[in-house]
Length: 347
Image: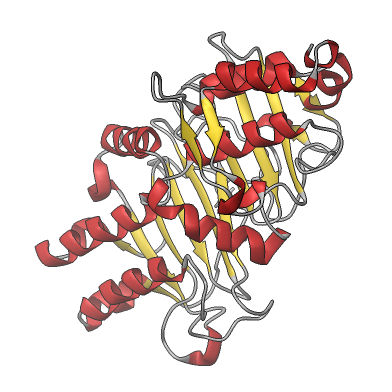
């Protein structure tokens, strides 16, 4: 354990193992600093999870580490659970429960799970919603890092992200995820000023504007918007809300591809590739439908704050009221079992 050697030596060994170093103090507080991989070998989030696991004390492991299929009476299968405001374990990342090196490792893992082009926007979201990285954020590790079966989960208000090295079979992102942002106020203005994720909805609404009267009638759901946490798959036997993508014109489908690109943009390339693979297995975007929901239209302006792109085993559910929550679940089969909290739509 690092506790058994001098702090300076502990830090040196830690940084050698992790392959990640912090930029100088002039870059700002530790939780806002970018983390770069060591020149000789670029660390992956999964390799850093293994390093983190190896630094944990028995007490830490008892608190944040669980068997792969750990089930709790009130929370069900813990590894696959998501909520819009929760902590998967009690300790905050930025607390005395973790050493400074472990906190920096958590930041490096988070950076690795997200696109470098989005780090500034995620920093803004985290500052607005939890006071910066590590505040009111928690982690859990399932299984044995470094083996063929493990997963790291980062959970807090407005964020549930995972990395698993493809341990979780059939699913992208290691399981369902959530990203969200409260831009300026709890109840945002219809234009969602300063919300980092709102441009995704703007692009989707531009597609609605491209539709003719008949297409809009198909796409707009007047009543019956699903609960936001409902990201279970409908498969091929249950109807999907909205307009089938096959009913769109070539230009409209091209725009939808651009919307999908925007949705994937915040995440690392390997997760983007896994989403693309899963979507291809189920028939691509042509197997999906796009729905806009009249309910919850902020300002009654016809710019739809709530919309859902869905396929047999693909859910990207954008909820813009009272602020942005985005619920995501993608797999290559609709037979994936979810935590009972996330009910299958239509059941």
